Length: 188
Image 1 (spheres, rainbow, N blue to C red):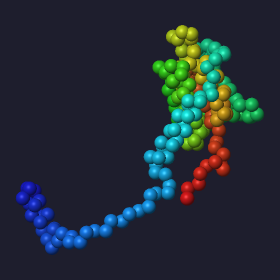
Image 2 (cartoon, one colour; image 1 turned 180 degrees about the vertical axis):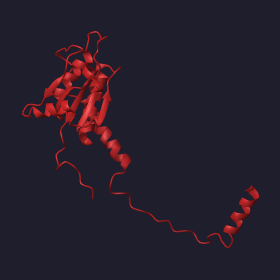
Image 3 (cartoon, helix red, strand yellow; image 1 turned 45 degrees about the horizontal axis):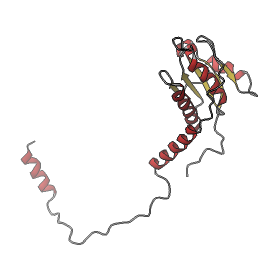
Image 4 (cartoon, rainbow, N blue to C red; image 1 turned 180 degrees about the horizontal axis):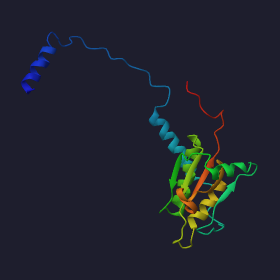
């Protein structure tokens, strides 16, 4: 088709169309009552930023682990079968966090935010790639901090080193508790 054909097609399609002579009344809507998706995201980010600024995860009095040590934790009061199910792969990994190359402070903030996000979005099993820290000075520093911090986060029910195909001693499966049914907002 040529440009001339397009112009003729447009002219024939517009045949009989006249410009408006009266001004068009504009419809004015009341501002939306519900927050827009962007406002909701910004509000959540502000809450997370505040939680991160007041990060309760401790950085002092660290008990060091070795690079090849296996991590394992079960919140008091939970049945040991939870760890067995975790080890057997009864849960599917739904989210991951890679801490390689991060400073201790960056890792601390990222880990807390990650677990809070997993809890908020009902992620049950996540994997944290902390590395073994074999080349670090001291060795396994970030791994040792993760071992401590994961115990301090209330949303964490259990964690253990991942099998070799998911990073072995350089990664940990983290089981996150379910949100309270009353806290889940029902769509209107």
